[in-house]
Image (cartoon, rainbow, N blue to C red; front, side):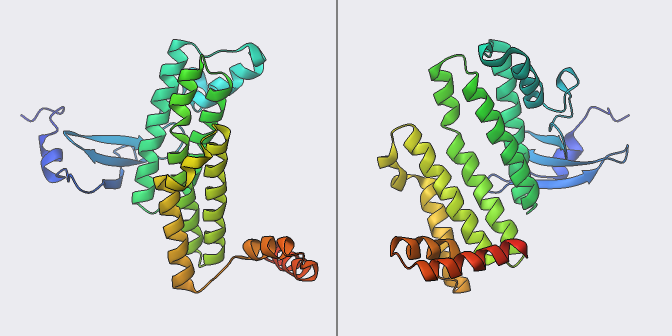
Length: 245
């Protein structure tokens, strides 16, 4: 008789591949869809919405929502304790794993949503951090999350046949990355950042492939800098039309 806890057949039927990320969406016996990621010596299963492990911390959808509620109650006096710090780590990792799944499955809108959740969690942790060392250890992760978010947002616009919007998302992401370096007085390291380099390469590839040249925003900035105010006004009108479309 087969033991219901035996995963041998599952693991044999879905081999682990060292050089690629294996992800799939499956339907469970109860009818709900979940994500599965093949990892070394096992499989991770993640819910499609809410917290990836399917739990509701103290009845809240996510631990972030629980922390936000407590922050509203305690205000500026709140400081994360050891247990809360551990729960932050758990939620960060879970959303990272699901973000990888969404990127692999090309579900870019969902990757953006999960990245936004993680960035909001990092913001909350920075505000109520127990000490500077803990803050820095988590802020070091922000560029990676911003990189994923920018990638996903740009690819989402490409799927919608909007290369100009994709380039605009990359420029926005680069500005956000620069702001992180400026905040920690490390602007001299910005140009050497791996994620900055990859986003710049992505942007140039898009400009080359779609012959899009400079975006409207880039042309507007150049017109203002050159004091070409009539041209700047025309570009602003064009931007306004695109936002209404």
